[in-house]
Length: 167
Image (tube, rainbow, N blue to C red; front, side, top):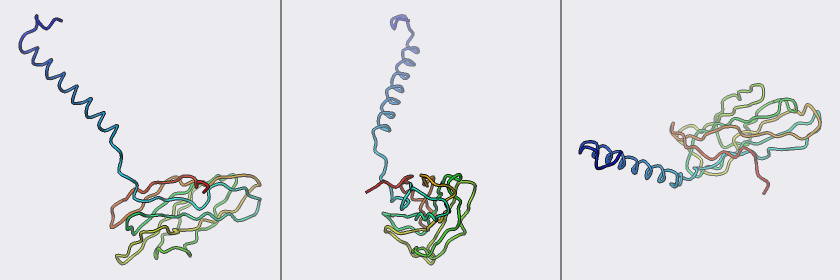
């Protein structure tokens, strides 16, 4: 269709469509190039991979390094149930003064801890220690599969480090 043979109304519609398409392209480019806000902290494991021997206990510490004050933390840890059996969760080395019992399923354990009374923490601190019993000899991994930190009911979305990197 040639522009000369179009009516005034058709040309106006074509102009509007072209302007809207240009705006859409600009918005998409802006959204793709805009940096996301930095993480408010990180949840990580003290160790994630280990050579194990049948019958030994394997302890993995869930830690939170918060860059802003928080009062509640939740983390889900995944493990290989063919190599490990979940035994218990210890909250004895944490700064959190309240904890819910760990929720253990076939190959995950979820821990939750909180500080009560309006107090918060803003540092690198242990949340809980998960203890597993090795079922076989070999190498296994324990991974962080989910988590969040909260202040006054608002999620802060810290960065999750599924595997602890060697430093």
